[in-house]
Length: 513
Ligand code: NAD
Image (cartoon, rainbow, N blue to C red; front, side):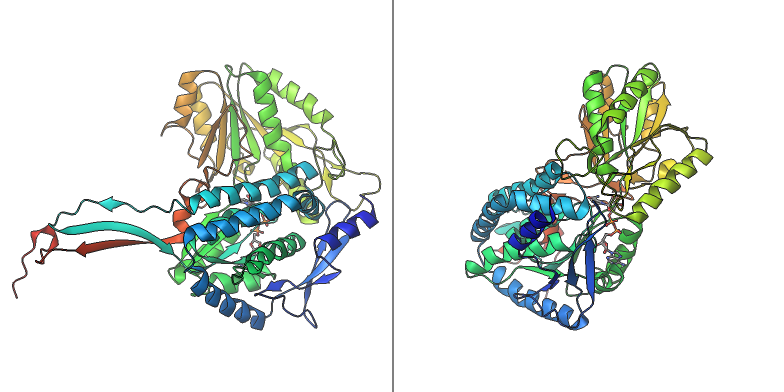
């Protein structure tokens, strides 16, 4: 993409050299404020600047959000769903443009960037249906002439803090559901993806406000240790949905717990694929390659550990090496490229350190392990995808390194494979490749994978929006996106109505007055 094409794209998405990063029904003035510069990982060059929220901006956003919540939560849910339907329609028009912006700002391939926008569209569609399905249960009462039921009510303005690697899809998973159930959303995006956030907020609020509704999607760009802290400590936000690393999630969790608020935590993964000697090898190879290499190993669901049955170990590793050698590394805007850059220098240092530690701990690098220089893009951090033969007990196996490093382990029995699989602190996604019914069902049983997501004959990465997404253990236990994840964005009320002419008490208690 030429410089002129890039400028044109940014202009069409309403982006200038310096942009306001605070939205509360209007964009906050930019004059005199500190800015965050967004750099493209493709060539390391700046793309644009976005202002950071001041404390005054923060209060403006909170006040506007509270006012909007009053109005928006009173709109009937199916009508809210119609607004979300129009948002989905608008996003369809912007799919290509936003997808390219995602690619430029975080370095994933254009196909993956567009896929991310498609996820926003899909969750909007899901939310439209949901707007007519916010059911509560009716429960048989033990008392005569009583009705006992539960209903779900909007929760309030909620805070959404997102990671760099899914700069708009994760926001949409939260926000389309939250908006449909009657909440309004205050978003603190990653400081590495501020332009995507700014463009998305502009597109979606225009739809909402043109339809005569108050703004429901607010934006607060700023540093995690400042704006992020304000958000997590603020009692006016009953729910904080956080997506990011385990250490940051732990910090946020403590802040929110101190005020007895609620969290949805979507933290790091350390996902493994088990390939048994009964697998369809072609499917397994494709599934593992996609899981390990997509988004240059920078997905929470990236396959980081490969657990191979000893009879297929050598052949699988050899074939994988062949695929790795052919995977094109380079500018993610170019067709045919599979592996783009790492997000920044720190990510590259993390890659280097992990390889060094793995080697010290006895690991053998059998492919990759080095930086790649792409002509004309020397400032970008491109690396070879890396395969490391590892042994059980190596400490590095417990660490999520956000880079395309795959540790390969050998097992003999399926029980051993599961033990290796479950031996890490994280519990997000998992996969088994097998055609054997017993192995498959064992993997899916309570004795099998301990993760929130367990797949058979498909990759650890690439979830659909229809299921509830999230993981166990240090991944945080949150669930978002589809299924009944909407319940986390509402408050449940249990209601008892006495329509009789007596006052019987529960448990048959007599209270004689
Ligand atoms: P990160 O933890 O560095 O940052 C995430 C967000 O937290 C950013 O917006 C950041 O500005 C903010 N933040 C930083 N300090 C904060 C503080 N003290 N208070 C509040 N907010 C603060 O993560 P990252 O590098 O952007 O993303 C990569 C991580 O995210 C990986 O661990 C990955 O597995 C995880 N992730 C998880 C999921 C999931 O659904 N489980 C999805 C995507 C990414």
